[in-house]
Length: 269
Length: 319
Image (cartoon, rainbow over all chains, first blue to last red; front, side):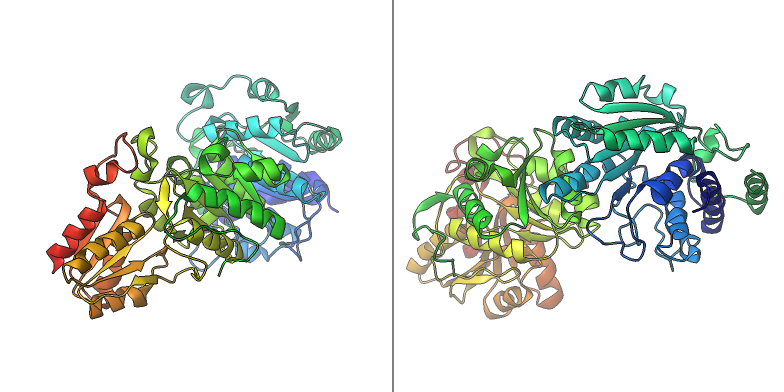
């Protein structure tokens, strides 16, 4: 299997191609999760692209659903469907909905309304426990998810229930729709707060695929509590003119020139 | 027909539908293993307590956090288990409405939502608990089956039917003692109305606690020589089109009767149906776009115009 960094880079390239083709989408938050998706789909998770509904598959839920361009292209790269389908992002003749839809092969939960992903992941984890199935559930949360009360209900509940088959990865890219997180609703040290609800918390560089693998291994080895990985990330990671620039949160239309400039950087990364 | 192992109540008895919920939960816990109950610390209120006591392994407890419970139900359903989510109407149908829409209905999860504390039937708890908008809010979500059984016996049949039905369902559970209308010979079928009483002058199409009141009104009118058909519309969505058309074409008009706001519930569903298939004169018995208040469950209907007398008057006005 190809190098995870290379896979993540290809996710970024295809993601921007999809957003460009779709004429709208959220590049910033899609680029910040590319490394996590590479590690999850190409190293960590037990899935079978030929059987997307196999009940014992590991689950993945993208709670920050607006970052789905990266998810769709990662699924295509993994073999769930042809890349052409992912490139029909937001198109009327395609299935690559503007936010995740379970009709997309490999998508395990709907999202796009922030705050519901961790609860749905808690649900799959509870279903696994009840039926004594060994699969694990991974949920990627964004800054917006952490501001939704629903997420904190799920944090309380999963900690209380000691769900050690559940992992949340918090993509902490520090910019939200209209302004920096620090000005909209500053949450301070999120990991510290989550830990008080009975979670094992790990801090990691969200763009370091090796560190992400180590963190996921630690999560798997942690018994009696769910794991919360605080992934320190850069919004727009990989494209210099997008990095840490609020505008690229989206939803934006990418010009041909912007796409070309982005690909030039990524293809030489 | 009710399963012989499931004990049912006698026609005419006053029984809270909550008691039926507890009884059928325990019965179905023994009968099948493919479902779990999701509760938010209100099993004592919804009637689910017997299950919690007898089969705690079949209950997932969420504490008072309904949004988490509802979205988690979507995930539970994804693993092949049927989640039966149960809470009070205001919390299940309103607070967690978007979770039901996005995490359950949109992905077409095989999940069931059963809510107690519905309508003025709630009584003394007052307006915040008296859910008068659930039929409207749940009916508006694509692909959701909406059911409102008339009594305890019908509820038990309906519960088994929704477990067998693939897809999202919302079902009302009553709270106050309600006359049992249906005996052991009744058969509940999703989407199928039942004609409780034959008549030719006016048809009352009622749901939930209003069915018994419709029968009472019809009996009074019969003494005056007026013939009232009474239909139990236990499934609000999909509505039984043929029974609405029959009422519209064979009788002089339709009175809808529901313990719900007059907007968006049973009356609206009937009107939508009749307008398209066989326009008819109608009167709407329901709560007139106002909030409820504290009072006993047998005092409030008269105050808010949803008692048997209100149905009687509406029928007279249609004649």
